[in-house]
Length: 133
Image (cartoon, rainbow, N blue to C red; front, side, top):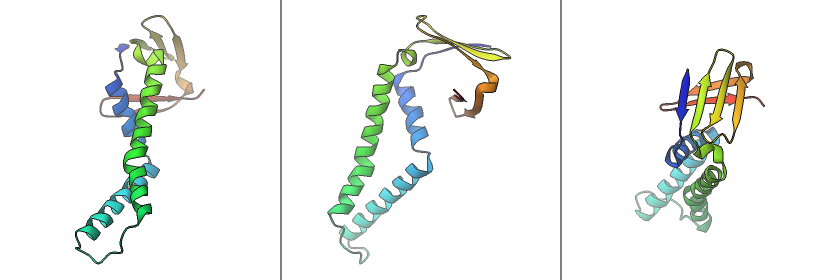
């Protein structure tokens, strides 16, 4: 089976953000940030008798809700634009014994044997192929 693939920056951002924010540690951090937001909101609305949040809670919330996604975003953008392979159209040939990938500009060629692949994950719009080096 032959495939032609061109990954846009928007697609690349989408898949990497979804992969990053489905990890257990990230889910835990986002849950913690949600609890901080709830605590701060309930304190300022005077709904519950909660202790006053100090500067450390605001800094933690800023780090989790703003700085962390910004760092992830900048890293993804930098990786995308530093790799010629990601920006080129890739011609893929899925054979019985291997996967052959060739960049449209002939800048790179790769063969992956099926035994070297240890995991294939199906997402809504993607198939992610993980290989051993």
